[in-house]
Image (tube, rainbow, N blue to C red; front, top):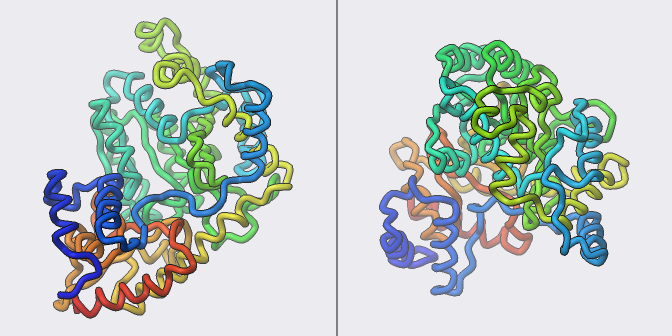
Length: 441
């Protein structure tokens, strides 16, 4: 079989790092294998593995951060709860685009949504000794499970693709009713499938969270990026981003700058904690930390012990970006719509060369084109190629990705990201797909 990349380069690297099954390879390990192959061969890969922004960072943020540095903020520790202007603008942004009221005091900056979620996992797992398990609505971001593994916290999960609409409630209740679930995490749109839970499904999650006193961690890294819904992303105007905050007080929303503002490198998000949950007292926290309120423990024990606050200058950048968006002078959704355009072209090329879209339906309609997409390939006998083997074969042809099983998926295939394919690479991508199909059909 003629390949683009010599097979032994890929195989030897994974053998060297002790990965014999690519279903176990992390995003970073796949990226390292690709970088190694590029260095040896001089051939550039089509990079689908990393969910890294592929458009310029917000000019609003860059300008504000430079000005902040010029003012000398680099010499000063920021308040652990966040600078006042960021807290004010985060509260206003949530009202403008989600139509939820959260007091500025209850909006806490974190070093990206990953740190915000890690701190929330840690805190939620300590609130009640009986509630020692995190529930993941999969497929999901693989590193969030790694975080639980690092903490030594128990986990449960299920693939929501099989439990949409009226099936979701009974499935969630089968976990909640055991009394051991401390919190649930999900993203909407979903990473990696790009499915979008609808308002009835979000309502179900919220109402059951209240019934069983479970905290919902809502990862809004991709908010407004369901590009089928026209009108999203206009401040203080319906339709708004769907959110569990409309249906329960037991929530922490993660608003990240990484994707919507293309500001991933500066590592900032805001954990927006419901007013009621922020001020809720837990005797277990008083005994352990000397303070009882959820929000105070989150900021002064969890985040303080991890990073002693978020970089001062990037808080100024985030405040400026949130303000410009809420003022209506920065249409961030139009910038990131580029990802949907790229994904549409990528999917077309995949389908023309024997591949199929794994998560192709969102209930009764085609899944949206957006930041992530999923694809698989059938062997000559019509059965799906196993995900780890498919990834290995794709790497031989200079195309990367991550295996869907690493995201908690029960289906066979690959998660891809459209962010880093350039215009000049589409022709190369199509040729590599053609060669792959010839070799495997």
